[in-house]
Length: 257
Image (cartoon, rainbow, N blue to C red; front, top):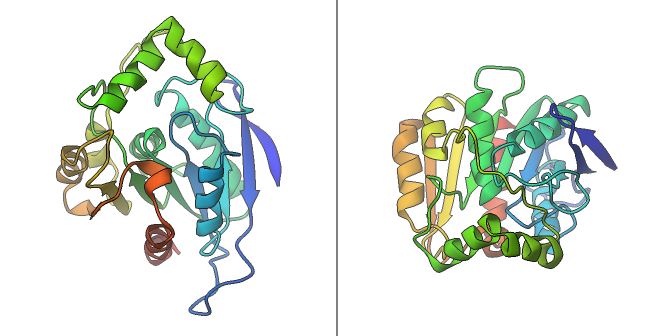
């Protein structure tokens, strides 16, 4: 099922619902009450092969709602690189519940990982909150430029010629304005998420954000969060293999299923 959702600030968001798989390994059938809402990384979209691979893996455990953030793919608007994107995720979570799933697990990668953390913090204790949160390869703090990939990303976002490359090279339309005000950072968000179950996943070979980022997040969250520091794993969806996605699926069902 495919549709366009409208966010609270009037942006049209391309969204897809994939039912749970009808074939499973025999250990247990997929959950029908639970639904995953998948938040992709920067320059991704709902039709990218690496995003579809994650969707396919998670449907072994529950249905999946995926969507393209604003400015990505066929969604309208321009990306704010993690700020207003919380409204996109909120629209997707509301749609998932409207489809009849009482429990929602948000799963985000990289930029999407920061968005699921902020969404959980901003909606803590409300009907709009997720029932469990998985953040993969998220930054802990804003404006990080300590690695070459992040310096290239900042050029893409902050320079007019970079935004042209984003539009025509990556199908990503980037807003030209700076954040005002600066949004709540991920490390400021995580203490507000408890008692919602939180899983932080990060690779020890991540080329974008070194391991001090997930450790900062886990320290800030305290006992409310689990940290999986994955040996040899790189960054985000491309680096998340099927075994890791299966472990995430099992964790989600055990916490919110």
